Image 1 (spheres, one colour):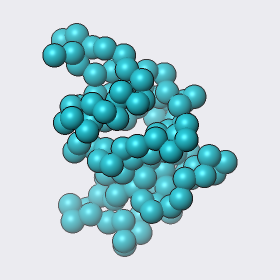
Image 2: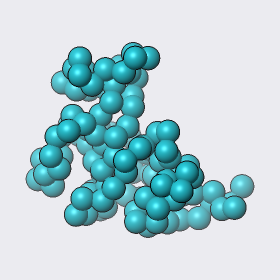
Image 3: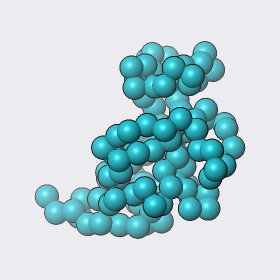
Length: 114
């Protein structure tokens, strides 16, 4: 399978077209789904290898300034304790959160080529 490296803007376009890819980063931030995006305080810092991007994984993905912002769903064990609120809980037991990734933290965004 061939992969292409894309910009955050192109990745958002591809997700909206129904495609799935992967964003490589060593860190991102999680916050409550409705919390405002403040580049000085993005939320709870999470060390990670990346994030799957796609309509099922990251609906409502957008850019707010230089920050990629998306809803995402995580199992309880991957959701920071302060975000395990009743209003964020999903029927299947995980939690809906807002993931925030500044462009400077993106190492690469890969999507399979057709």
